[in-house]
Length: 236
Image (cartoon, rainbow, N blue to C red; front, side, top):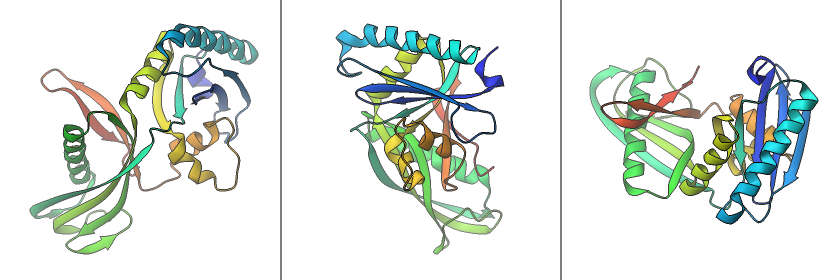
């Protein structure tokens, strides 16, 4: 039996430790957790095989405790490479009605422009802080209003591209499908005074939709266009 039928696994990844937590379906606190120290850090290529073996060993431990296989999970990463970058995207139309498709297209254009200039970072979270529509400011999405000019004030939460690729490779080597990646430095602010020693609880809250201003990214593949970004779970 796969874990998707029972609940969700979250992995917390820092420079010194990896945490594994399991959340039962419908529960906001993890049922089971464990952690282990890693030699040096993920950036040390000489120790990468050791880290893979340690992760595999601990995956087997938690599988044995729970009685089913771990084959997918979400990853929370704590890293000094964390950056919050503000980005404004402007567009002018003939009068039309504002809907999800309009916002999605504008965001995709902004993401493409960001990656033209930035080669070393990967966008992990997208937050729309403001919608300025015909010079009127909205903090939340104003669906189905008519407009001509729109400016999105967007915040991109980013981590080092090489780090993200290494984390994905680590879990791929352990046959774990990575569903979503969360920046712990972004997510932890939603816990307020609560502790999050495993890095996983804050990630769970973020992926449960605690920030209504966040939209989500998915990598899609087009034979003609290569890899491009698709916005999904948009204000659902």
